[in-house]
Length: 83
Image 1 (tube, rainbow, N blue to C red):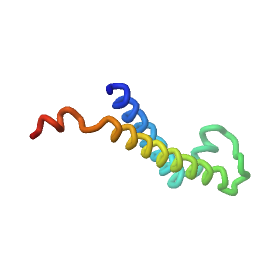
Image 2: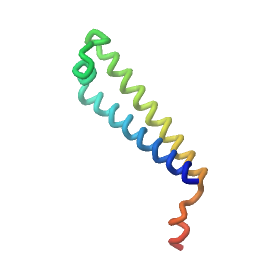
Image 3: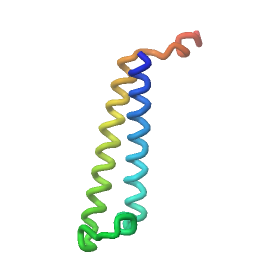
């Protein structure tokens, strides 16, 4: 059961990081060019939108996996002690 809980937390953490990266890319589009020193899309912005779309797809997929893993574990022990 501990492995499932750790797995769900890792999935949620990576989902949060991917979501933050996607949001940062929407706000600050030039970070790719500044970090890597190349302009892969020639200034059209297509690479940035690919990053945003990919990050948000990863976020949604990992959140769904984390919810599935968390629900498969059942209620947490501390939730049972509250009654």
